Length: 141
Image (cartoon, rainbow, N blue to C red):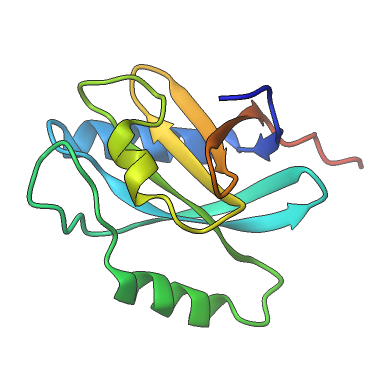
């Protein structure tokens, strides 16, 4: 992996949701879709959508394509889109695995990986590049 490519803006409530889903799914992997916006080299996460994990093995994840199509339709015209996916590594690290590399497909797609820590990556079409994780800036009065 190369140096940091961009930043993902991840509110605390969304980090907490991902941690809770990861704990609830253990020892299996949780998974879902990431809603947000893209602006230059910043990805703003606005919501997570848990998905049923279709994978048979406990150390893999597979998001139902029907869930992705349904969410994409729901977001049409909102200014938000599916910017990525998330899953957990209950027995591993918050880094992309070889299986993640094999399953990656959509270029410029954010991957959030929950383990003991939280990792954020961008699939470039060839490799995963690390993303910096930041809190949203406080709203001005």
